[in-house]
Image (cartoon, rainbow, N blue to C red; front, top):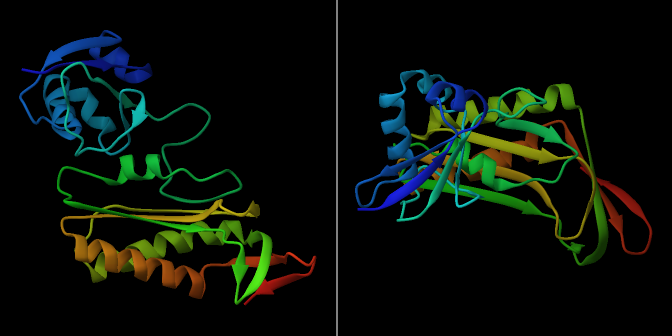
Length: 220
């Protein structure tokens, strides 16, 4: 049967009493299933359920990833320098879907939809050099949360995460990420589309086109 190495850090290491365990798992065991096994053995880990990011072989993963012999698994606790992972974020930092997916997926989910809005080089047939985004940040993040809650009422879905970029973005950069987990794909697709449409309708986030000819224009 497969044998994997599990790495522990910070508060997890204190609970388990070691920084590393080698465990034999059943074939087809997933990252999520192994976490459930660990919480049964070390009940204090249960406090972190839903707040850990998952990694396999030093790359972010998700709960449904099947483990193989020799894999290295890490359940990453909330990092220093901030609060727990924030699923609804407006930021000037580049966006990465992996932490959102790792946070959103649970063992109950059979579908995961990730939508990324990318800066393209044209709009309406006119060449674009770059975009800039401005937000009423104190209000924008709560609105993103509100839209996720609206979607959770309308569809049978699980966790939702939405991150939106502000500042100057170059062609090819990601402006927005919407991640929806659900038991079934149709609900996940529909909810993700709904959330993205509603962001454009009511989120206090504004986009300015920087045209290739040097002109600028706020898109309203």
